[in-house]
Amino acid sequence: MRATYCGFPLTEEHIIDTELVSRVISRLDNGKAPDIAGLSAERLYYSHPALCVVLCKLLRIIVHSSCIPTDSSVVTLYPSQS
Image 1 (cartoon, rainbow, N blue to C red):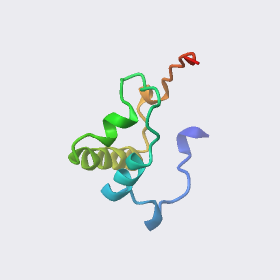
Image 2: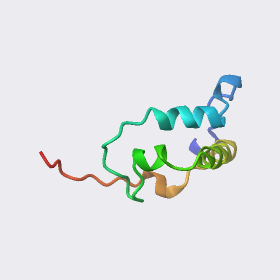
Image 3: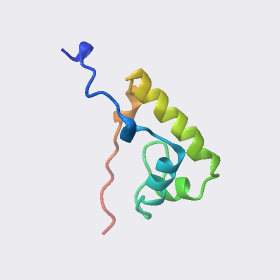
Image 4: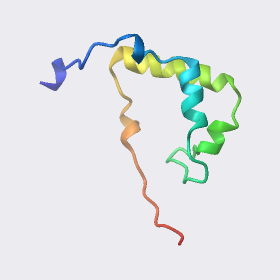
C-alpha cells in the first residue's frame, strides 16, 4: 500500500517559498542541542540569507519527488545537564 500512496494533492497553500523558510528559521528556539550533523538553530539563524533560497529549492525537490532522504530519520538523544 505504501508504494502507491500519494497523500493529499498539493494546493496553493502548500507552496514552499523563500519567505516561508525564512519565517520558520526565525521562529526556531535558540539554545537547543544541535542535530547529528552539528546544525543548531543559531547556525541557521545567523547564516547567509542565500541559505533560505537553497533550503527552499531542496525542500521543493523533496516534495516534488516524494522521496525523503534516509538519513533524515536519524536522531541522537543526549542526557540533560541539569
